[in-house]
Image 1 (cartoon, helix red, strand yellow):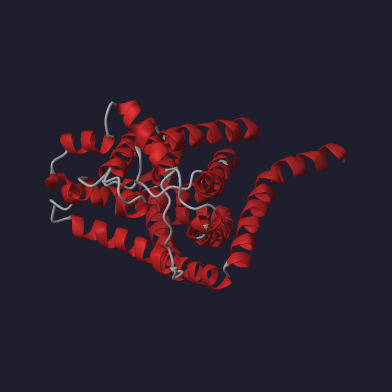
Image 2: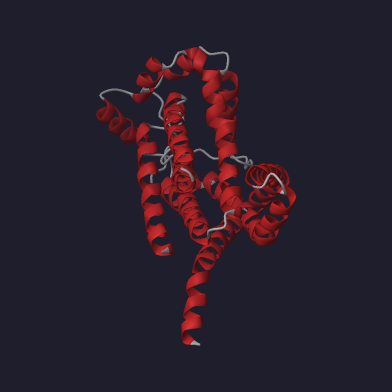
Length: 324
């Protein structure tokens, strides 16, 4: 009886940890800004969740056709029966948690004013013997900005939802919970705690928050050489306007250190490497592109990405060992 109780507790601790972490972040976010939290939650539930469910269904159907071409619907039905309820639970928790993340991220400068950029810029310059954004733009011409924007925004988002769906339906509890625990630690630990401690805006906003230095004065006109930059600055202007006006807007919040874009790409590479070496190699190449793009577009200092990669690898190893 005692051994059975211990075994049950051991099998359920990941779910309990995830519930506590998600519930704690959601409760804090709702207490700080209930209206903004509900707007973010509604946006995720009504905009992102339906799209994610459709993509998941198409992905499952494709996998069923590849694995069992003679009876794909039978294979699909079996997967949904085994993991359908669990996958919907994960989708619900993701909506609650991501709404909390964006709500808390918007309020970071209310807790710790942006201060770390001069130090981060100096570290970047010392590590790379110059400003990394200059190196990035010396490699890729202005014409490359359009394809790079596709990689940095819609393709990153597609991988984001795709890996969550893959983890939700994966038959291995160990791999699924390693991914979900690392995901939670990434967003709560890096996206909220570290982002607050190292409150920073990134090179693209540097001269607006630290006027007089002109440190990144050449970055903006360099980016605007490409016709594709209009969407990039549409996003940047929206984020700055939300900060400057104090108007709480959904999916708004400036934060450079650390890079969540790079962190999520790193986590997905670690996850996909466990499924297929070739998928893993492709995901690591994608991570390199995201790191490069984060510097090229001026969203982040290079060191933001380095910290994210190191931290996510540490999270993965810790939870992978714990799940064993």
